[in-house]
Length: 272
Image 1 (cartoon, helix red, strand yellow):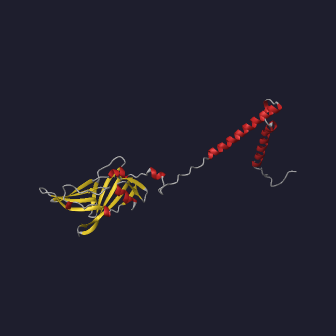
Image 2 (cartoon, one colour):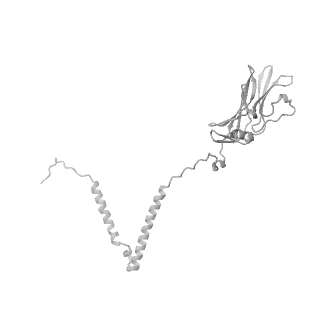
Image 3 (cartoon, one colour):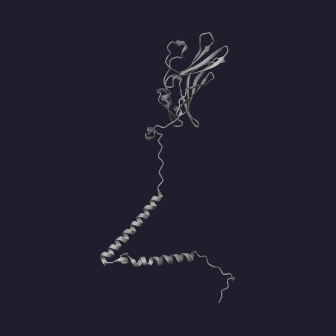
């Protein structure tokens, strides 16, 4: 059984298999009734839709069984004819969605955010030719995290009834257990880039500690072995005294190589 069918039948969470979104429809459970009135002089026609997203409808007390949809119906459309001074008359009872024929289709949109559900029912004669046409209920749940409105009867063309509902249930979310567990939908966490700056810092820190250890141990050796004092404590003092001169020679050599050579303007003649 498809995941979407299972979740709708149990009134739990609906998973959109295409876009990998999860929707919680539990807040929309229970029997709901939405109506619209159409003027058809000299009468009026009231279209009354009674539906339950999570369970099958139960028969209403005080209403003839012939004026109700058969057992197993999830959405029932009743057409009532009203005339002033006369008793209301039920002229049509149409099962828009039935558990045996439900075949739910779900789709989601990100901008604007909404969830679309299509439920199917049995065939019913549709005007003007009165040919049997399969019925369906198209429910659009608009995302509103703060407010739940009453469902609205939008249109009915003899085959499909369009219903619109604004509720938090139209906003998708992901379950924490799906992010943690293995459902085939887990994504690998992005690898953190290595911090190159900290590696360079550690390198220079090690060099600094090596110099400190070198001078400290050398000074201790000179003091304990030769009884040196002051500048004589510096290990390899003669070498470090020559370092500035060596650096100066290196700098001079580099500058002489970089400095451009002057060319003679005397056509290659050399003074003698």
